[in-house]
Image (tube, rainbow, N blue to C red):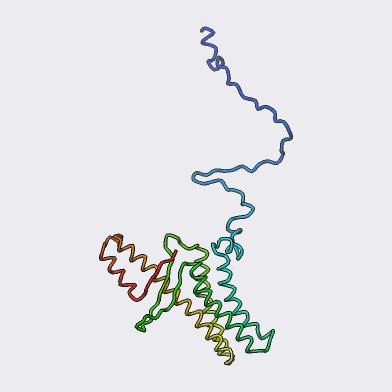
Length: 248
């Protein structure tokens, strides 16, 4: 046989050039890096951040940072907390019952006015009052913000928490006063319940009225869940007993 046949074919193919990595300048770290294993559909794990957003926004300071109206939110809580604190701690600082009663009543009145006229309008875009017409008929008047300008979620949540939680606190204090037979403190707690429950009921109806009126306008404009004028007429009957207004 000839030399071309006796010589294996593989011996005639030159091997590929192997790139030799150039030496790196500087000091080579001796600590090995942890290999990253990738699974189909999974993302590589990332090192935890120095400060997670959830941790940064947690707590009272985080609530005020996220609030669009931190001053209004502060005074909403400070008046309510101050009224309860003075009621509970006044006996440790003074034995003057009249002075303690006056301070608590003033704080309750300030909280009632601030909640109805400032905090409610600023934080959730709602306001209410009772009006008597020339015929002597009394009816509720509700104001609501244009839905094109929604409330801040944090402001809204903290407002409703304060509105519904503090009446229960005063109710618990009323039960304690009755059990301890502290008849002198029952009128103060009763007045606090009247103020707090009035605001809770008023803003609850104001919020319900606002939702019904905007649903009524949406239905009347031809979007009444596909029912046209019938949907608008059905929703219009839900707000006959209230007068609604809109402010920006």
